[in-house]
Image 1: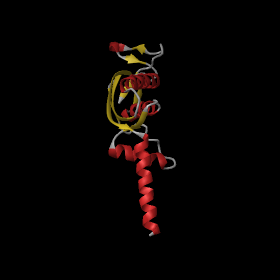
Image 2: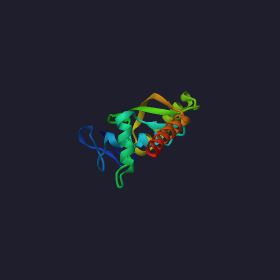
Image 3: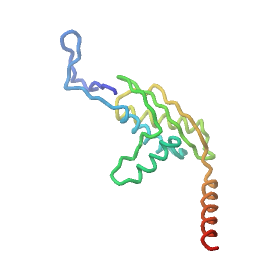
Image 4: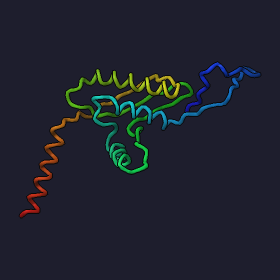
Length: 154
């Protein structure tokens, strides 16, 4: 968790050099992960975030009314007092230049996290684990539907 001092000029220095102000704000790791996850998902060219179980959990949680969107699923963060680092696994859309996508992700995550939390983003590690080819999913769905319908019609 991060303890963030007020950025305004209202904090004062007390005895023994301690800072005293109007209070302290603590930001949980999950908050940073959610902000980063949303910024990543909103980046054009990202098909999905996370692998296996975290991806499936995010899909199920997103369908349950009243649940959070699971914006941080598939995103790991390390949060210090003033800085944070982000690790993410993504699947990209076919045809997207991956190095350009990675630059856009880093820019969007940095802007979102620094703006919303005041923490400095020092590192964003992106692991591209797959490329999504749209025709592959469509063909598999059609094959499954054909086999189901022919099995029922016999």
